[in-house]
Length: 333
Image (cartoon, rainbow, N blue to C red; front, top):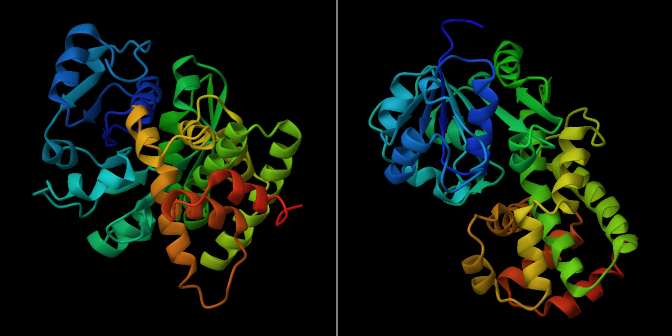
């Protein structure tokens, strides 16, 4: 491993915890930033995150734990952000040191609400980070299965192949296989959109629809995703690859999926507010739904997105889930 590579993971949730675990397989030191100082104290003493993936035990001699985001950024070259998109900008505003020259990888599956941009575009537009220094880490991969060391696959996307390889090599292990991609925009939009489709899958499950229909929903979701991403960023890509279809399937079907869980609660009759209050983790798809819906209204040519539209109608317009999703069954095949 290149001795000049210094990694920092920013975020204290389950995915940040999983990424730190993966990096400890290959690196001697990892800086780990989280704003929760109590959690940091607990990790130092008990060697595990008290709030997420508590079964993962860390060798704390490998960790530089800090609640100072300036320290994490200043002392490292590769920054992996795993902060929920809704909180990203408020965390970045704490910075007093420059991001210039840093290599930034997003492990965030959402849109930054302040700008309506995916994370890579946000760093490029707002912080002037060149695209060759921006990358994306996508699945299909659930943090909970990383904790269990079950075989998982990651796609590392970056315009600069060298940077992609550096991160891929730092994350891979006996139970993590990695591959690289140059479709930074497409993979990041796919990671955002699949959370919306997982909410739809959860709503249908909560309403009592079975596996037969779920398969039809997933088939339509990948086609809708393809239409949407093609309108955003047209390039040659195979939508059936694991970074797109694979990530969609695991998020749409897995019991670990917080977005599917959120949708399931909506389907069972929870209000949006009550479902969000009951969940201890952020369902990125809730925020992504509004951003994806509003973004597509600005496309020069229309794109057909009946599934996104239905989820938006229920979450943001307060329409009845049972009636809205029954109507949706006549718009997909």
